[in-house]
Length: 399
Image (cartoon, rainbow, N blue to C red; front, side):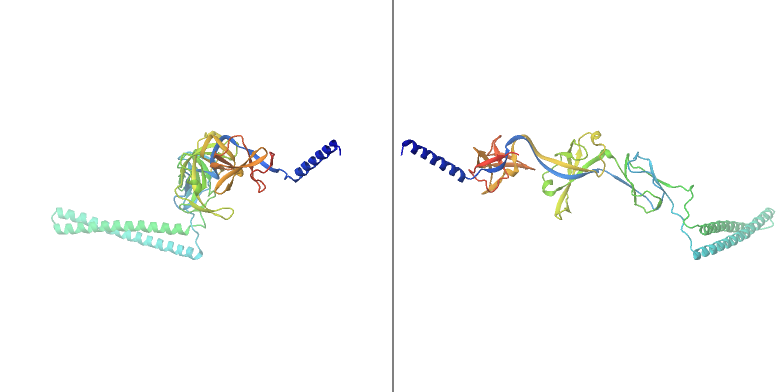
């Protein structure tokens, strides 16, 4: 066989072997990748909250009575001392037929007692006139020494006794007159009769300068002492309240920077934590999980003109910045996995996956800080599947 033909067969055999080897090799694994970045990084806690007034005032009825219609409406502004609402005496109760007949009898009895007292007064006045006349006569005779001093003194004592009896009878007539008027008033009561307009009323005034927030009572009617009528607050004292999980609340302290977002506009409001309440409470989540939460109060630092449309009870979302830096090496947390208590990632070197040990720092949402093990600009695999291993050929999919 000629040498040229042998070489041709050899080349064809080698090509066939190379083709078969290529067919038998596993195809590269398609992976999602990301780049190790260095830039601003913040450790945050995010939670939903609401706006509330720091020092609201509930204006209640100081006494029981009849509330006149409240004309103030939510949104109205008031100044300290402005009239808010008025209370008047309760309407007179109605009388049933039996009580009305008893009232008529009471009027007749009171009229009879008055007549008796007036007759007694006439008697006492007559006795007083007789006693005074007798005393004058005896004084004249005593001056002429026709009667003794003892008789004169006895007559003067009778005069004083008659004067006292006349004064007592006069007071009895006044008492009987008052009793008759009271009985007539009871008899004159109509069903549910309101107090006359001329009767004095109790005016309740605003304790502070502020805005009407709510009106629990608007219509006239009987009201009990202590029942709320209006709620007033100063909208300049609005603050945000966020109920954090207790494990997050222990990381927050007064002065922590907070960003309030999704309050109705794109610009975030800047604030700081004013106070972390010392006592938490238990709340059941929408999923039925019992959670222990702690109220955190936030003072808004942004100018009031920016968020003047916010009101009491409005919803906000708070972003607590626990730690931040401008130059932090970071990767997506989905690139991390653990192996033998060690955090690792897969980087890509010459189209092959390389297992790398890393040391992590803070976690925040979908990002994690890398302290050691990677450099900025390296390509890493995110969401590595079980097909990815050390040295496995990979094909990056950056879509």
